[in-house]
Length: 454
Image: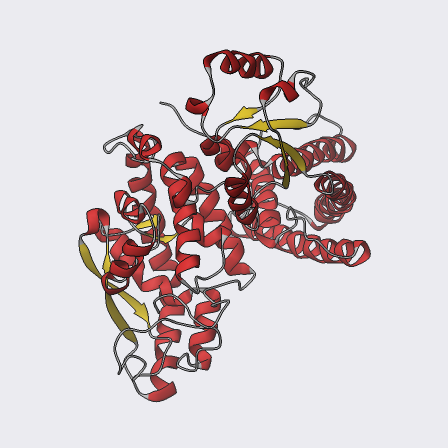
């Protein structure tokens, strides 16, 4: 079973942070256990769970996320997040011992557990700060791409660099003879928009460069590596006819996805039922209107289905028909703004996930009345209907709330990346990134005056 992992290979900073924290935790736990009990520790599921919770809470809280800020402020911000992860981990571990009726004396807590967590938090803060410094220095030197193509294509690509995963800049070249002295490890890479337009003899030259270690990419390969999205206007018919943007149905990956949908959505409905009840009561008390509202959306293979959400707008929000949501939209109620920030208004859609009309992860569904215009203006827009729509998706965790047709095209570029690289593991990454967005209250807030569907 072949799984594409370009999204993972570009997250070296995250992988390094996880490896560092895992190593620190293992070493310090072993040392503390030897010192406290005089013997080597054995395998322990609670300890493995403790390490896993520390890593997940660190990711969700944002300890592994580098932010461009003043160094001192960034260090204090990181220390604060580390303190939150520390308190959460201690609380969860002590709760486990309380619920399992395990024997954990006060002496063991003070002499082993608390010092262990404190040491991990301190050393992890220092290590992550040093790692962030290395990443910041490397990002100050964007990767150079030698571009062989027309200036118009280069300008379009430079425009797309506004939303990218890796930093990059272009240096135009006139012909391949300028690459004669290029060697692997030199820092430069080569971008050829279309290999079919390169003569056979020069294709051999490019092959030799690739063998020597110089990255030589086509337009599609460059978008996948640098942008981690595929701007629809850059894709050609041959790119689509290769079938890489059409997930094969009935595969093990899709069966795993469906199993995860059932387990996670069912569990979330049970866990969030009290929150839904409180939100419903507050909405009702707010203006006496209905708690839920429904809309038709386009699903798999453009099949329409009905979604239900907690109402976040005034009762008469669409008295003039379907409208776009803009920044500071006066139709959104104060409570509705909070529900959108925390994405709690999306929770009733979990029922659609259980019914199989939606998935937890996938392209966000759009209203049919808006899709007609989007399909007319955006190339390959219908490709997003090859996958079940989702509560969250690659576009939602990498791009702000849509505000125009241009935003819809940018979101489609992320959806196309998801279609090409879909896997159970990418879904897992999107799920964790969604949890991080919810935890940091980065929800559905438009970024400009004209927006997407409510």
